Length: 357
Ligand code: PEP
Ligand code: MN
Image (cartoon, rainbow, N blue to C red; front, top):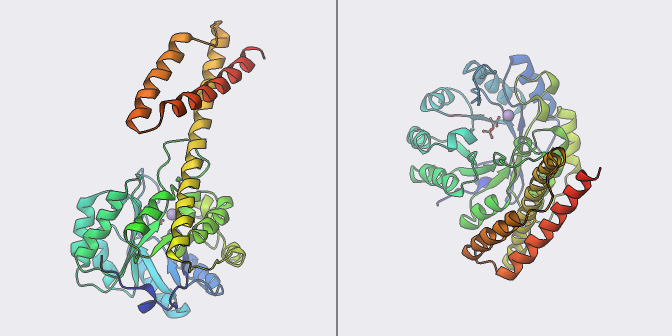
């Protein structure tokens, strides 16, 4: 892909982090101007974001103020000197954006999940001088994410970047979206020139996790962050739980440790691979914990129905099917057997405890 380096078109130096902040949604002129003015005092933030059209999973929630909000962003740019960014999802949105002073657009997770939408948007963006950021799709499908970036790049969009906002969790997890860091790292491996920033707000879903996710992203050499901030988060019409006040955003920015970003390719390879392993291990543990919860609920059922804890046929069938799967995945039978024995033993212990309590 042919990618224009960020520092050639944004007010940042080569290697400097790009920081984007602003509310999930534009709600009123007052809210936008007041939030922007407060964020302005945070030196690290270069771009003001706001959703104007909100793609909601279910109808009946706040669906955005619409193009009226674009004039408020013009005002933010004029008053505070910010660059501005909005989400677009249709060619019509792009048409509206082009009548205003918006500098960058992003494509949301729901839109990126649909190649038809992306193709239409890519056509509409042809020959237009907007920077375009592509969020990861809802599903952890790196080909879909790559495909969206390629469709845009193929249509001459070179001011291009990716935003990692996590993936819909099929497993139970405390975060709103699982980071699956191995996926953005693989994207960076495929396209080393592509800037990738992290959106810790949509990964976290709750304010309390944002700091940790932001620091992780910086430790993994992401090129910047996009963080939701609202002058009165509790009153926000969307994503109230995850938005920070500008004051808290300022504290967060000061607390972040920005590490040396240049290492030898060899160091970077090891570092990034370790982060991939860390992320996969976390997911393994989350799955194990979920498995254990089910084991315990079966334990409670066995206790009420007076059934025995250990059932030989079930254990034999587990061993047999898992060994077959392991073989297909090129995992040695000895390893699979001893791993399963450990898991099985722990499960029996957990069920015994329930039966005897
Ligand atoms: C947003 O940035 O407010 C948004 C809707 O994000 P996502 O597409 O990542 O859900
Ligand atoms: Mn949001």
